[in-house]
Length: 88
Image (cartoon, rainbow, N blue to C red):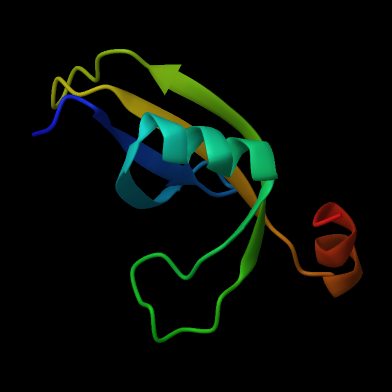
């Protein structure tokens, strides 16, 4: 695996892991700066749902797979007004 890539783990508001991805440091930084993401994650055919980033943490060395990872905590935006307000 490329050492410049980090595993990104997405967590929902219930504290459940619901998706993951592998990204470059720069991509992760941009995601965190946005504060909001729209992605259906595993299935591109689904309608994109907006999620607000409510926090993140870094795990320098995951004990299960020996990879660095970033945990991103998300909350689904269910009110369209809130979604458009956060997009600036």
